[in-house]
Length: 233
Image (cartoon, rainbow, N blue to C red; front, side, top):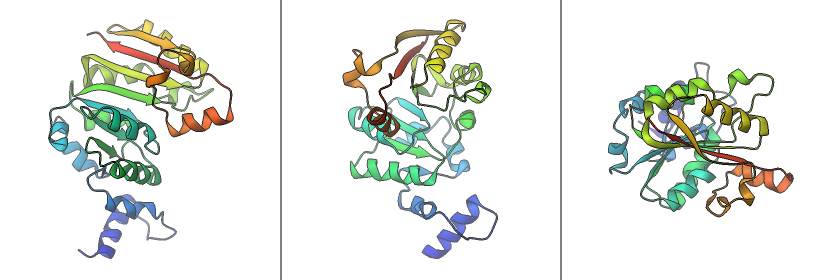
């Protein structure tokens, strides 16, 4: 298949309408086959087999909403003994993320173009050792659309191992308190650490900043909230 045919095939994979005013980052996905998977059938085929993709038996850590990859890049470099999978929808962010980890020659990072609510389609029971959600939309006045709510923990019931951890960062104080209150009401989960001022806490030195976090800190004098949650059952 020629490069132009590959582009046409890729366009049809995402869109039904004729190719026009296209996003150039769509075609750049083809430059990173080892770092980006956009085909749902391929993702689903790895359910329960993600260690086979990475060709090792290292623990799997999942990041929901990986943005432009700063956090994933930092995690891959700091923890070579882990495999890091980031979920992201935007084409540009996927390409920027893959560019960063490829530049570092990291082999333990992967990015999937997939929604978080579809996790059970491509992640198996007890397959994940840790999950990160960094700065999700707080959905003020419409909290039912939040990523982290009671239904989210029903997903964790399946995919997160006993003894696994969920890590949460937000600049939104009410979201932070709501998550603390929610976990207190749940069976099988325990808050093992939390702070309303991450960058002035004992965790500050080990914190890997997301691109949003870096921008936010430059523009606003606002605390960052952080929670670590242990799955106990």
